[in-house]
Structure formats: C-alpha cells, structure tokens
Amino acid sequence: MFKLCKKITICTLLLGQVGTWAQDLSYPELQVTPKASERLKMLAADENETGLIFQMPFQVSAASTLVAGLMQFSNVDEQDDPDKKSPLAGVVVGGAWLGINYYLGHHYNIYQRTLKDVNRVTGNSQRDQLTRERYAEEGMNSAARLAKKLKWMSAITNLAANTYMLTNVKKDSTSEIIDGVAILAALGPLFFETTWEQVWRDQKSYKKKIYGPIVSTSVFSVEDTFVPGLSLSLKF
Image (cartoon, rainbow, N blue to C red):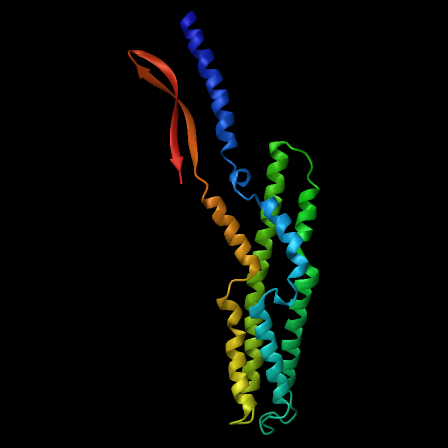
C-alpha cells in the first residue's frame, strides 16, 4: 500500500511539473526572436523617417497617372472628348493617390499607435506578456491587410483613369505613349511587396522556425512494474 501511494505521489508531481513545462512551450509568441513587441519598437522609431519612399510602387503609379493627365490637356481628341474631361481623371486620381501616400508615410503611424496600445498592458505575468505580444502581432497583421487593400484600390483606380485617358487621347501623340506607360505603372503595386506586408511575413516566418519538444506524461511497464515517465516528440 505504501509503494502504491508513493507511485501516485511521484506521478502527481511529474504531471504538475511537465504540465507547466509544456504550457511554457505552447506559446511561440513568447519564444520567437525578436519578439513582436521588440520589433514593433524598432519599427515605430523608424516610422517618421519613411517619408515619400514609404511605398515606392504606389508613388510611381500615382505620379505616372498625374503626369499623363497633365500632358493630355494639350493632346485630347476633341471629337471623342470635346469637354476635355479625360485629363481631369488623371490629375484627380494621380493627385489623390500622391496625397494618400503622403498621409500614410508621414501621419498614419500605425506602428506607433500599436505600440501605445502595447505599452498600456503593464505587468510581467505570462498573461501580460502574451497580451503584449498578441497586440503587437495584431498591429502588424492589420497593417499588412490594409496594404493589400490599398494595392488593389490603387491598381483599379489608376488603371481606370489611364484607360479612360488612352481612349480619348489624340492618336500618334506623345500622350498616347505616356498613357500606355502609365497603365503599366498602375499595375506595379500588385507585383511588389509593401513594407507592411514584408514586416508581417517576416514575423510569421520567425515563428515558423521555432521547433519545440512536445512533452507528455506516460506510464511504462518495466520488469513487471509500472514506472512514470515522459514521452518526448519534436514538432517542426
């Protein structure tokens, strides 16, 4: 009876210790290097320095549309566009996207705003640490999702404006060539990864590189007696 109680006590202690160990290994947010909150601090510090180079494909697309619109004022096919509305499409759309990108690069500061939310969570418990890391990851993911939406919105609006101008441009003019180039530039953002998307992709990649032992308790039969033990497997 004494031996049975001893075995039960040992098993109980092992289960408690291993349960805590396995729980510590179950949160990749706390094991990844660098942590999302650490990387967020670096990104927030650099955010004000991005300026107009924030997302270069967006800038090239918007500038191309704007230039095409300005050039078309003197090269409109007056039979197809007697009111000369087509150049305005390029000027409005191109100018609007330049303004949007300026705002995103200088004033939106999504990483700084996310960092403020992260810093509101104080305390050093595992729950507090996990909350901070998940807030940081949510901010990175939110920026990446916004970038993807903006890419499609930019491509669609700039493509529509440039196509409209091309159908109303004077044939064999310089503007006809510029409109064609602007159409290609309008699709540029779809083929290049934005900074926000790259940050989130890298962070996910860091987490995937973590491999940890999956620990579970077990009871093994050794020489006609049962012995508590650990079962260890690796997860990649």
